[in-house]
Length: 112
Length: 114
Image (cartoon, rainbow over all chains, first blue to last red; front, side, top):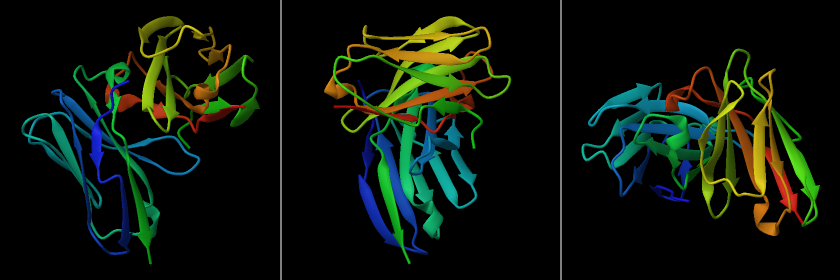
């Protein structure tokens, strides 16, 4: 099945650093979502984006819906140890869950 | 805790066997979704049920089937298992027919086929 390209694949950063990751698609999407998955857990929705150019924050997390509608970005500021996990982007043309295409994931490790 | 309950959490079985994964959605949710997460394919949508009826189908193999019961719990049946079926299977639920931002995932069922 199709997957979206996420980069980087993994990141090792120090506590307090800022993190940036992105997701690109060959198709246009009308909805972009960002999820976090921790070990032994299912993905948890962090941020949802619905409009090209939209910038949305959730605490220290900020995500943007790319102008071309083919990409999205997630930034985490001042990382803390509990930010550890795998971050997935997901896009949908129709806005429905059954049409979500997920990214390959970015694994984030935070060291003290 | 998302409120979506999946059992079993871990399962090891042999090739050719059949297994059933169970999912209880969040209270009040009418839609149930099944996803497969594997290392090489990532998270892939398999199938959605809404209030007992199949609503959407994704990359679900013919060897796999699902159903949603009157009490809204769902089961995913995997038969003639192959090594490549080893994966984490997630159930998710949502209140309605399926807005992308309304689904909540369970903790998953780890299936290992040996």
